[in-house]
Amino acid sequence: MNYRHAFHAGNHADVLKHWVLTRVLAHLQRKATPFRAIDTHAGLGFYDLTADEAGRTGEWHDGIGRLDAPFAEDVEALLSPYRAAVASVRARHGATVYPGSPALIREFLRPGDQGVFVELHPADGAVLHARYNQDARTKVLALDGWTALPALIPPKERRGLVLIDPPYEVPGEIERLGRELLKAVGKWATGTYLAWYPIKDAAAIDRLAATLDAALPRPALRLDLLIHRPDPARLSGSGLIVINPPWTLREEADIVLSALAERLAQGGYGAFRCAPLGPPA
Ligand code: SAM
Image (tube, rainbow, N blue to C red; front, side):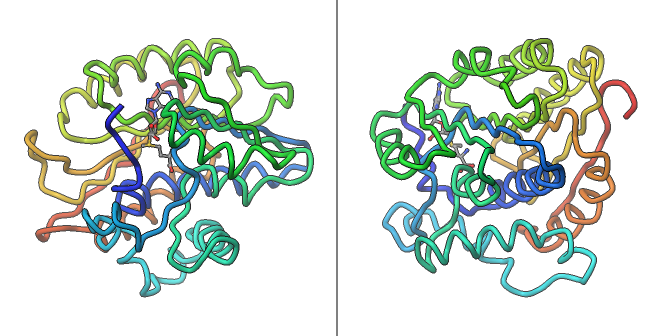
C-alpha cells in the first residue's frame, strides 16, 4: 500500500469527485428520513495543503487552487454545497486544510444520519479513527473496503450513498470495480453509488462503461473530466460512475463539468463527458 492521498489532496480529481459527492449529499438531505453514507476507501479525512506531502507535488494548485475566482451565477449555484462544505471544514480545522470525503460527508450528517468510513492503511486508518470515531454519527473501520462493502449493504436506513474511491495500485482494479458495482446493486438496488476512476487507459474505461451499460438494472451516469489531451502514458483526467443519480444530476453535471473543463484545463486542453448508462431514468 504505497498510495497516500496526502500527496494528491485538492487536485482536479478531488474537485470533480467532491463536487459530485456534495451534490448527492445535498440531495439526500432534502428528505427528513435518515440516510447513511459509506466510504469504502476513506483516506485521512482532511489534509493540510501547507504540509510537506501536498507541497512536494503541488497538485492542489491546479485543482482547488484554481477555484478562487467565481464562476458564472448558474455554475456557482450548483457549486454552493461544495464551497459551503469546504468553508465549514476550514472553519473547523484550519484555513489551509482541504477536506477529504469523510470530512465532507461529516458536514452533511444530521442527528440520526450515519457515516461509515473504511480505511485499510494502518497509519492513515489510525488518524481517521482518532478524528472521526468519537462522533456518534461517524464510525471508522480498519478493513478492506472491497470485502467490507457487501457486509455493509443494505444499511438499515435504506437511503444513502456508497463512495468507492480505490487507489488503483493493483492491476485489474477497474475490472474489479465493474464486478463489485454489479454485485452491490444486486444487494442494495436503491442506494446511490459513486465510483471514481483515473483516466489513463481510456479503452479500459470504455469497456467498464459498456459492461455497466449492458448489465446495470438501474439508471447511471458516466461523468468524465479531462484536463490533458488523452495520452495512455499519463493521467489525462478522471471520472465517476454514478448509479441511481439524483434525477437533476445529468443536467447539473453538463453545466458544472463544462465550467471545470475550461477552468482546470492544462496545456490548453479541457474536455468532459456526461453520458447515461443502463436503463433510462
Ligand atoms: N476517498 C478519499 C477522499 O476523497 O478524500 C481518498 C481516498 S484515496 C484515493 C484511497 C485510499 O484507499 C487510501 O487512503 C488508501 O490507503 C486506501 N486503501 C487502499 N487499499 C484499500 C483497501 N483495500 N481497503 C480500504 N482502503 C484502502
